[in-house]
Image 1 (cartoon, rainbow, N blue to C red):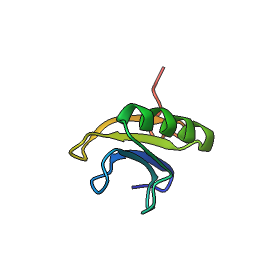
Image 2 (cartoon, rainbow, N blue to C red):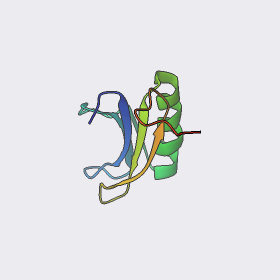
Image 3 (cartoon, one colour):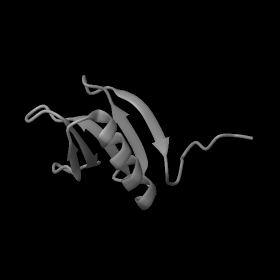
Image 4 (cartoon, one colour):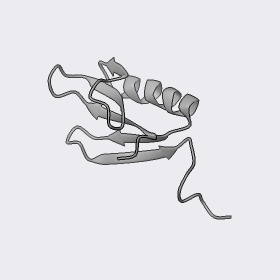
Length: 76
């Protein structure tokens, strides 16, 4: 995990969803729904030019977005 990433992850202790910066224990934002976390997390990621990673309930990555220095930018 790079520190230039924000992740949307399920909060297994209290329920709901968290937006966390990679390497941080504390959530930047806690929401009740995944969509709220995605919306807020995407806004944070765009403002801070970071990679944005969305996880499923089981913790697996379901989607990624680049708002920073993409290591593998699209060709063309």
